[in-house]
Length: 422
Ligand code: ASP
Ligand code: MG
Image (cartoon, rainbow, N blue to C red; front, side, top):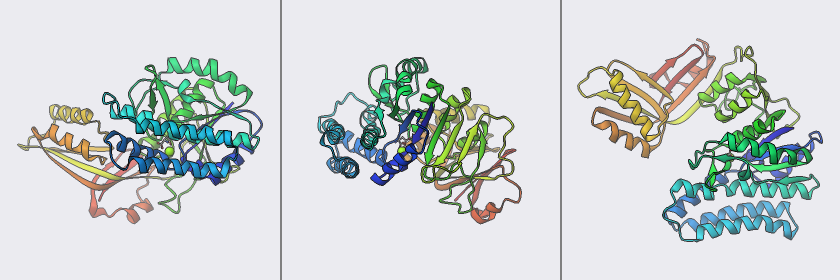
């Protein structure tokens, strides 16, 4: 049994949904488990809706209407039967009921987020499943919340494997043997019976969770690019496809911020030796990338470019110019940990500590407050972090992209060169 995952871009319009059907029909008759994300950029819209709902902003109704119109537009091109149409409409009505009711003031922002944002995945899967059944591609819609059981850490829920795996094995596996299953990525349920989500872009991870529990033969992630490339093709027009990659290399690339595969996805697959394919839904017959367990397999000489924008650079110095040593570092790391900032790169010199992280003004302000008593803290926004993985000394990209005068941080390890510049 194989697991497929289709992301937002693969279902962003009625034409895109029709293409998913083409991809699925091009496969062998053997049933699949298909995990699907919210359509297009709907998760961002739903995040805006949560914000408007939580803070009771006047934009609430308009945002809801945008979500509704977007889905209805797609539905009108795919579904003609009234009964099917109401299946989708019921979800929209349910969402409307939630946002129109007075808010339960005891519920946290993150809890409300998890109540509202999963509608993106519920709607997309309902629409795709219904359309596929209509055109004769028989499948069954399943609610992932019955199988992916998580902690109640809303918006960043952790999978409870001991609860989820038996449910998937005992109740879902027999169903997948009979017919293709369509289900949601990204969402789960806590032991308190509340919706949870696994973190943005979490649908790849969902596919890996199902694959792990089902002992799937493989996972295929369908993308709008040819596979894993050595750089974002939208940024580097000479980007090339990486045909084979080991799990370790994939983890390393993800660590440096390559967004092609959600980092948590690899672990469950690696532990069960389940190969991962990344393929193009626009060219489904093409090979794409194969990520597999193989210690020896390397990227060889292929340089990979990973660019992260909107980086904040923090410079922390002691007020008396004494050295930054262990006790200072302990305070500094504790502060980062307390406010929940992850460091993308750090460097310690005699009298200052520098690091860069994804810009987040609220967290940065809290950090400044925590460190302000002991240190002089400066934070500068608008930087870019570029990582060249497998770099060579005469890398052609260096000169063309980075102006040496603007580099504020630089670090080399045996395989990666990282530069932060303005
Ligand atoms: N729809 C969710 C998001 O956009 C999950 C995903 O796409 O993987 O973050
Ligand atoms: Mg998405």
